[in-house]
Length: 119
Image (cartoon, rainbow, N blue to C red; front, top):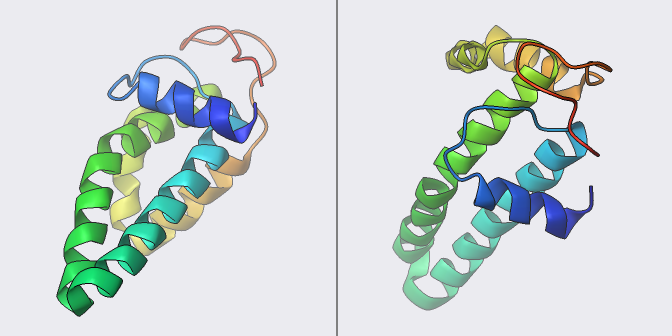
């Protein structure tokens, strides 16, 4: 899956926590999120100073939070884990564990969350 297709898929499934997401879909969308937030910060600082940068980047984070969580849950489903594991991101060790799981290879066959996504 390429950059544009990943963004289109994740934004199309804005709040869909069911199904599976390939590694490329998840990581391309993560990159998109980082770039949008950085861009919002730069534009906000250029137009409204530091407060403007904080406000605009906060708004971008708020808009992209739900599709980011949904893509994270679908990525965990692709490794045959429940999306509820996202809650361990509230701990430092949990964040490390989630990164490892997000980077793992997809399950080759269908699992309890559906068919393998096309990458």
